[in-house]
Length: 272
Image (cartoon, rainbow, N blue to C red; front, side, top):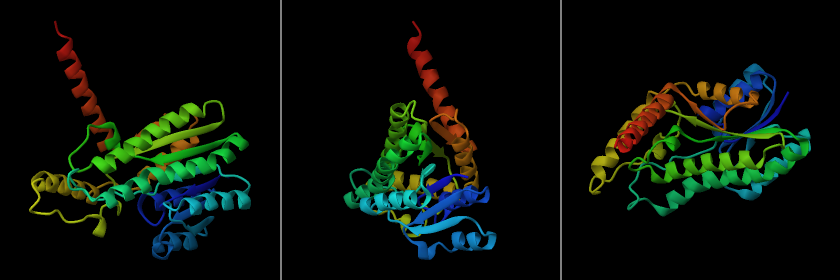
């Protein structure tokens, strides 16, 4: 039985991951900034009598995050798995036009919040000689930059690099790091007020609108986020798991296509 702390559990990947760990008997601390709206999680926990404690946590509040780690350790004596799932997209916007406050919010949630939680949990995991840190990235972190996605993409690429460096630093400690890189899955990350309208007067409107439509359609038609939850559990259980794990047929296909493009370019440049 593992003690698992997961952020962003109100819906989507976080919710499915919390349920997946709990259904196999692990003790789960499922956090969300808005626990009042975590009805689906709460109902599943009550219906199945799952070992899940639903806790309020704004991951951008560094003091609250550190208190959460301390409280779980004080209660359980350990933390075996930390899943940094909470994240925001911030919409699609050209670099020239992006709202700086929105850009900072994306980085605060997607990068600095995991950074702080990792730093808070590491002394405990190193002390117990075991543990797995899972960071949610995206398959786009393996691909060239797309228009309108610079801020989100950069934050997720940073998480991938952070995960790789941390894995190297923790060699021999018994603590592992995994960056999960999902393709398009059906979640709420790009719904409602998270999917702001495009200014039709913007000089970037045509290209930004096209990207916006493609992403919204891809997520709406995306696979079940339970697939990502299964991949997270598999990576946690596998001591030989690679540090970066692509999840989803679309993610694998996109990366393979990118590799073929790079290989073709390399061959073209290598011809005498």
